[in-house]
Image (cartoon, rainbow, N blue to C red; front, top):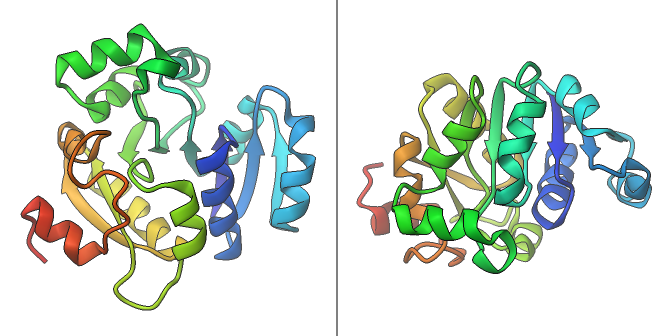
Length: 208
């Protein structure tokens, strides 16, 4: 599968590498793609780099890992070039300012926010609730694997997200539609715990 990574920071770089290790083709991107040469070299022959728009056009699936206050402009820029999106952003008032403050105060959660600002995309909330160093160290560990909660409105997009979570070496935990993503947002009991998939299901009261 071809995966465009938009936002090649801590989460984007790690998850992109895990996807490449699983055999997927990756295009990392940023506003300054020439700065990504070292990352591409480290990941290996399945990785390339390009502009944000090039990565969006390249990917059958996009991993979007940008600050929350950049998501609205990105959604407008890429409106005609995005379909299935794994979206990882979190609201941090110290970084995102008023956007994060208003989202937290609203109680809507990040899934609803992503739906609003990525119109036309089949959004899957994923990879937002586990620390990047945990992702790097615990991928493909023996069972029980670290759980990655997922939320999506589109069933097929959710299946794609679950497959990619497995490919990356984790246990996908389907929570519900995008409105339920607030159950694994920043500040919730399951956020940044590194708990297993089974423990996550138990904590969230999910079956199976």
